[in-house]
Each structure stands twice: as C-alpha cells, then as structure tokens.
Length: 183
Image (tube, rainbow, N blue to C red; front, top):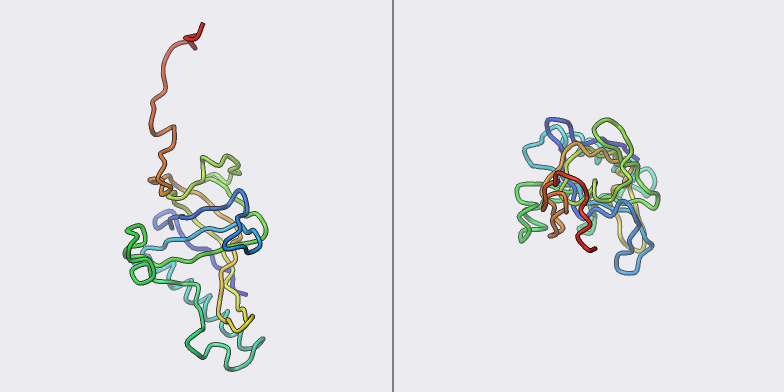
C-alpha cells in the first residue's frame, strides 16, 4: 500500500461526487464514503506523486499475487484520463481523476485544520488536498489498483457541481432586526 497526499495551496485538486458525510451504496455494494478527485493535467507534481505510488503498489501486488499481476488487458489503474473516460463532462476536461473510497469516514478539515462537520461547507466543486492509499487487489477475475480515501483538507470554495446553488450564494445578508412578517 502506497500513501500519497495530492494537492497544494498553489495547485489544489477539485472534488466531485462527494459522499464524505454519509456512506453510499453503489449498485448494491456495501455503503462507502467516496469522492472523485480531479487533477488538472498541468499539475505535474501531483501526477508524479500518484505515478510513484502506483509503481509502489504494483510491486506490492506482484509480491502478493504473483508475477502476472500487472499483465493482461483487464488490469485497472486508479488514475484515469477525464478526456477519455468522461468526454461528455466538461468538469473532467484536461484532467485526470481518481475515484477513492473507504468504509471509514474520512477526516475533513479546513485551511486552518479545523474539522468540517457541516455538509454545506464541503461539497462537489470545492478545492483542496487529499490523502489516499493506492493498493493492489485481485478478486473474482478482476485485478488492479484502487484508491483508499484517508483524509481531506478543503482549501477553497468553487462552483458547486451538484447543479444546486448554495443558499449563501443566492442571497445577501440583510441588515436590521428580525421582522415578524407573519404576525
């Protein structure tokens, strides 16, 4: 298993399909916490770190499952090309992505390392850093590498990808006392 932290203050990653507060079942599978991590292709530092972790995990897979672990057309890598695998979604354009998940709730903190528990504060579309583990698997004829989700740090807001605007973005604060307009 190879741990990697991707995203920096200058080059954050973007989060999509964020299911990090409640585990979700996908196609009847066990419920898991998950997030899609979008990495711009220009972020060479993150890509190099991921590629290094992938190579370490491949070596681990060969030790655990044998020399043919990485051979064959059905070998899956966690680093995917958004232009190839999600051409219809402009959010993934000119980017790579990794889908990471965990049975255990990830730690989620803000820029100052304060825990985020409010679900409106961390959402699909925000930016930050993420800690993941790349690990080998071989089960039921499927083999490859997967990404385990460890922890997340939100560093900045972004346009929501969920199709719904946040209430804080739709309205401005009103001055004055609370008016009892109903009575």
